[in-house]
Length: 322
Ligand SMILES: [Zn+2]
Image 1 (cartoon, helix red, strand yellow):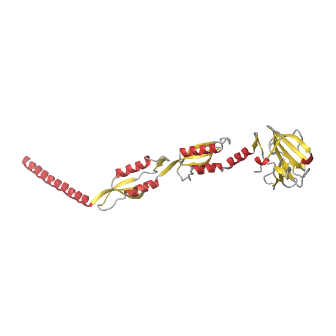
Image 2: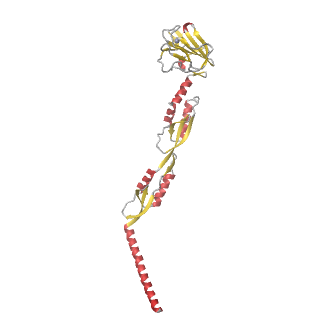
Image 3: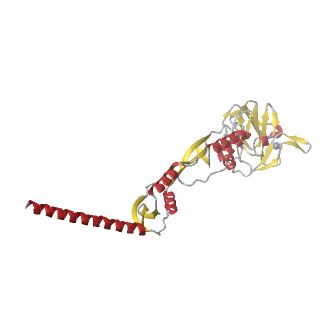
């Protein structure tokens, strides 16, 4: 009985070994056939879309890491919204892989955040340049140009931008800020400042005016002011704050207003048709003081404007109506 069982076991073991060997050998042959004819590749997808086929997964992952980490100085960071997915697949041995396409697609999908430098004027962004060095150059050039006496509040701010921003060269950035309305206004104001007194136009900018006679020698004589012809009755405003030291008739001046602005600076408004202030009045810049006329030694309605420093008449056009 035992002998029969033993024989049976021996027989089955032998058969089993035989079939297993055959099976393993068969698989090997099939695998060999596959390897001879096919090759393993990775199909790469990004956001569900196939972007190419690569041979070496690690090589591509390294290249992507390299791209996002070794950024140039002007790039703050590079973000990939999604990492590509790799799926192993066997394809024909002759089939081409497309590593280049995969890298291009990944780079195209990346969000690049650039580091730029904005030049600000009174806290407002005015120009954007490529580097901090360029930004510093812009600030330096503006300070140099205006001798620092315009008292401009210029700053440099680091900004991060994913979208395209038009960059300016140092030269253009300097020009942009020079041309800025605020800078121009400050320049004008500085030019119109005499002994610390900033003069403003005595007539409205919308009034139709014409310079009819300039300061200086005139017909062998001397003209101590600037004649601005305009319609009779046109309002005349104080060019700066001060005290009215004269308001009334004075010979050839006709109706005259004199305002003392301090620091030896005085302004004269002559030939007025009407006077609205009195001696001793305090006026502010832009206060209505009189109206244009043709009183005194005058051939037609105009404002005769004088600017005096310590009693000496200056050319008003050094400051106004340039
Ligand atoms: Zn005059």
